[in-house]
Image (cartoon, rainbow over all chains, first blue to last red; front, side, top):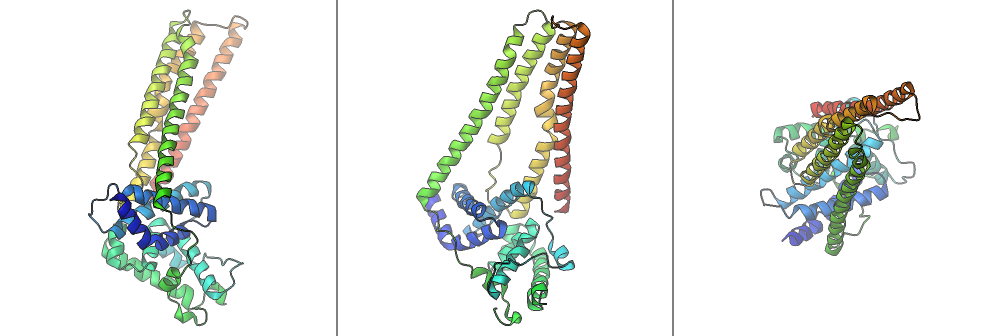
Length: 173
Length: 191
């Protein structure tokens, strides 16, 4: 059963897990290790999966929890100041574009990724789940926050994204 | 997206990223799980070996018949070593598996609380157990056992310096751990 659960989850959510690892870890080698750790953790966790929540919710919880633990270990050696969505909305764009990025889409993606990485873990998780297309209710189930709190955060997030990407950030100046 | 910025759809952009890595096969997962188990086993073995070395180091002092204080101190240090090894085993063995499917907020909070408590409690389970034995050892050296090649004053000075060094190291470790616990508490309060 454990293998079956895992195989199904990896097939359905594999690309989302890779994007999750990318949002948490900038270094390619560390990212590969993180992704492997996430897959291993999901496989191990299915030994205790009791069906209380959907497989998708379970997988997202496990993956984010592993990524947070990874991030905490990394932050001990590289302590960056992380921001909440509110702080992000109140200050300038912390996301510097990658100088090697050539096209506008990749540029926007690099900025979006940098913006996610600048957030504190709880806000980062909500942003990523939103970007993966989850509804507010599903995000609330994964995160453990109330649907109302999620709705407020999503409202703030959409405002930040609109401000940063639609009306021109520093790059469009 | 490439042209008009008002076309920006973050979800589409995010989900359109190309995959960098091939998915892991079940065989690879099983292999990694086995490796993880071996790693935990080796970590435990290393901790036990370290404990055996400490015990082996203090066992000769147990036979040092000219100072009962030093003998008692060595016995207490050996007991403290066994206690700390047991504590480390207990704390790592019962450590909740971080990948358990808890809601993110709960997991994040509980992880920080666990780390804070571990740092806060280092004093009582890792350092305090060695204190009585160390004190008895030093007292035994001071009152009952002198190095014959040194004057009494020089011997006492050496004991004082050694004691000061031990207090500094223990105090420094304790202080750093309390500082870490304080930082974690700030993160908990911010949640």
